[in-house]
Image (cartoon, rainbow, N blue to C red; front, top):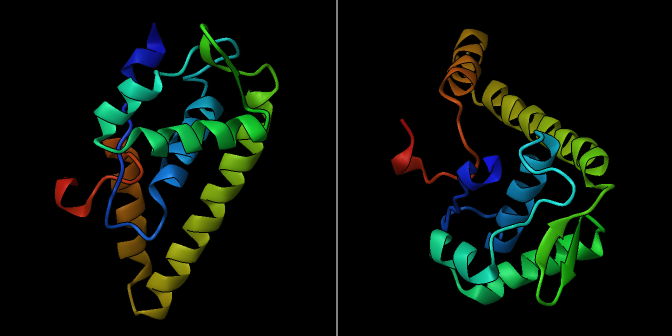
Amino acid sequence: MANEEIQFSVNMDSPIAVYVQVENQIQFAIAAGQYKPGDKLPSVRDMSETLGVNPNTVTKAYRDLELLRLVNSRRGVGVTIAASAPKLCRQNAQGMAKAHLHDAVAECVMSGVSGSDIRAVVAEAIKSGALPYVPTQKRP
């Protein structure tokens, strides 16, 4: 199954709460078509072990995604992607990502980074298939 190949990570040094990083990455994966309606998310235990975080953190992320109606949780079945999730996630995730990119570019411009350097960083991120929330020391 393709969704077994999805790589999740968290950056403990990020100002973004860990459970929000988990929520965002799941939304990104849905928006990108890596998760489709009916696909099952990793169990809370598996996800918490993969990320090295407390299971309560993953439980909160899954609960929030359920409140947003992006996933369905059923005892004995697990957490699955809701039918309406792809459209909602494309709108939400792409809007959020564009806003982050705009803010990052604005910070670069205000701090004197040249347009060519900004474009080079963006091009490298695209070329490398950069993942969100990877701690800085682990980036190429």
